[in-house]
Amino acid sequence: MEGGSRADGRNPNQLRPFSCTGNPLHRAHGSARWAQGDTVVLAAVYGPKPGTRKGENPEKASIEVVWKPKTGQIGRQEREYEMTLKRTLQSICLLTVHPNTTTSVVLQVVGDDGSLLPCAINASCAALAFAGIPMKHLAVAICCGVMDNGAVILDTSTAEEQQAKSFAHLVFPNSRKSVDSKDPMQKDEESERGLISCITHGTMSEDNYFNCIERGIAASSKISDFMRKTLQKEASGDA
Image 1 (cartoon, rainbow, N blue to C red):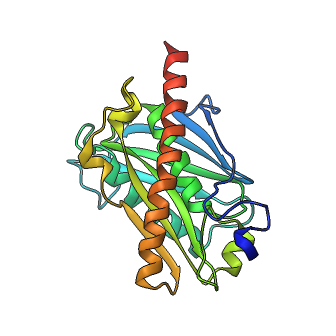
Image 2: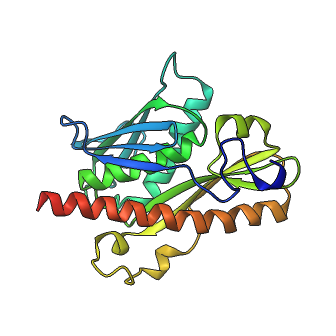
């Protein structure tokens, strides 16, 4: 990373090309294929279906997350991904609209070249929107890595995550108004602020942590704009 250049030629703040295909799965109530470089996740939403699982509050809707690795059996890491996704999605969905129901979100990993959990979160949020699940706002996620020399890089690849001293998966709110509104300047200020989730790996100084958040906020706006355009394009196509 001499001179700020990365192995794939990107600068520290540069994201890999990302794409989103809306409703590629016809049997799901909503689905999305989200790609960031060679990291690709397919998200499918089924529901809301009547009833909640044992231990869930029947006065609210329940979110169920199922993670399917590209190959092999699900392990500890994937279980942690499921729990993080469930907490994140529960925080953005309006759980009182369809009480005593369960909505299932199934994630299929198609390709993994780093930043896998953020990619899965972005895919899940797009799929929920395509399924018409009531949400307070969308969420967008990004990975920030801290290298041995202190450099902070965005949207890490697998090789970069293996070399990084630490990295953080950051999830930011994206106003639902800004998704549905034709006026891009119309913002829901309350939902624009704050951090929904932060999962760190490795040791990170306070300065590096806040640097990651600052870089993440800037990057999340690019992802938000892209998601907004994707959903509006799909909505105008349906119309």
